[in-house]
Length: 80
Image (cartoon, rainbow, N blue to C red; front, side, top):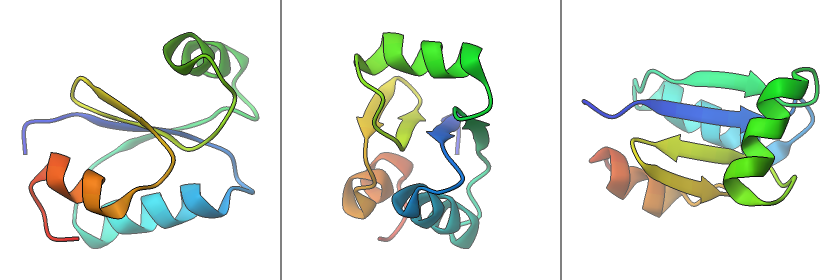
């Protein structure tokens, strides 16, 4: 896979946890930023999306707010 995967999340977010578990299950390497503890990454996320909602998942040039298993699988070329 040649797409970089980044997730902006918080420790208490259920959908963030589901997304990270999905990436792990599919052997997809990803970078996680805890926006509850990292003000710079939180600001970066807000600049990208205009909101505070998590998870924000970036796959290559695609930015998604929320956990949409089917859409993420399609972007990664893996089975949902």
